[in-house]
Length: 156
Image (cartoon, rainbow, N blue to C red):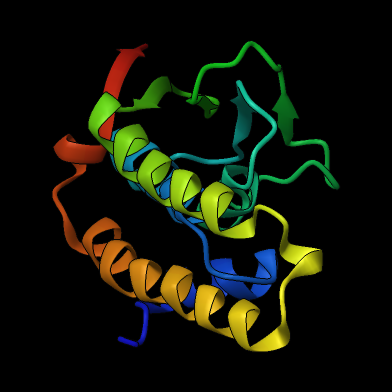
């Protein structure tokens, strides 16, 4: 397993485990912060889906539900609106990013089927298979260009 960059290590600590959506939430937050620029000021965020991405967004932007600066509007999209006193930007995950995360989710769904009835050795083997896919997938999410994962929808 490759060690994640610091921001993603913090995301996984906050989230409690490594996963594609918390990673992609971090990428959404980082991309939005880049588009807002250095002097963003106090931020407000709205994310359009209650997923693991929220922990990545919170870590990358400093916005959180606990502090009232991150609101979830469940409309099913994977879009983040980040607003500062001076500007706002809306970004969303690309279909490519969602497809990559979806392949991991499909693998998990298949391997977790009947989990409680499996012998511990089979659970360990299946968990290792899921971890191997994460070890391959997450570094791609850490290092690929923003344009492959995130697209700007609009800005003001």
